[in-house]
Image 1 (tube, rainbow, N blue to C red):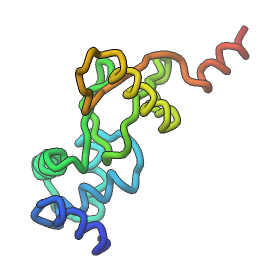
Image 2: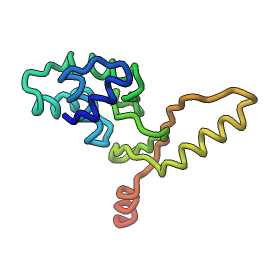
Image 3: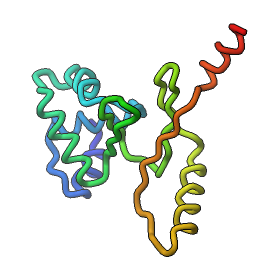
Image 4: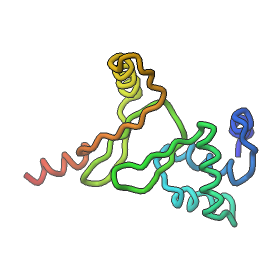
Length: 144
């Protein structure tokens, strides 16, 4: 685990433990939305003996300081990701794939909300759009 990542944890006031460091490493390196169980499956390979309950506590500690965000996406399980710039989630109704639009889309959406909210300042937003991903749309067209 890189010292640079440990320093980020310390700067946010997180007591650095191997469990927290490896939990965060899994999320940062994956770049994906993972359930706590998926984080645990990947992290226990790096840290044998890691318990699922410890992963849940680590995720909560990382979420509390803004390093991890969590979402419950369309009737699915709670998923976690390393916090990045504000971004909407695009969920395919056919295959369940979760993706993100270009970063500026989230910023424009936040700007539109702030502009049209009568003075309400939006600081955080969780947006989920349901539809059909390009891969599933292509398969539908090919079947026609």
